[in-house]
Length: 126
Image (tube, rainbow, N blue to C red; front, top):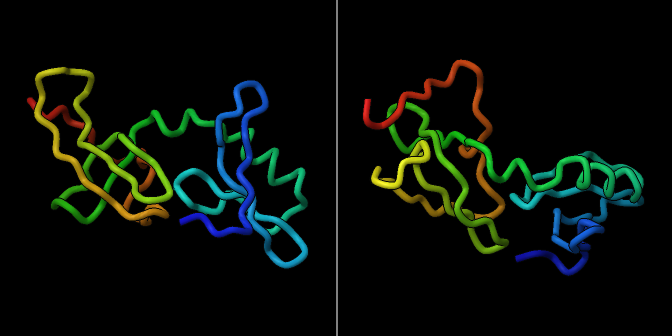
C-alpha cells in the first residue's frame, strides 16, 4: 500500500502516474513505480524532474530475476501495482513459447534487476 503522505506524480501530457514523491525530513524522495527510491533527499522540483526523466519506458525492457533458478532468469514485467509485481520469463517475441510467471511483492525486491552486460540471453528454444 502507498503511504498516505506519498504524492503521485503524473506525466503532464496524459496524466499517467510516473511514480511518487515522498517526504524525507525537510526534503523529498522520488519513488519509481516499482517502489524503489530514484533519488536521495532532494528539493521537490528535483524529485519531479527525476520521475519525468525516468518516464515509463524502463517498464517495457528486459529485467533479470535472481534466485529462482540456477542462473538469473530473463523476464518481462507483466503487472506493476502497489499490491504486487508480476513478471514472466521472456518469450523473445514468440507467441508459442511457454512462459513461467512469478508474483513478487511490492516494492519490487532486489532480486528483480536490470540486466548486466555479462548476463547470458539465450533463447529458450536453443
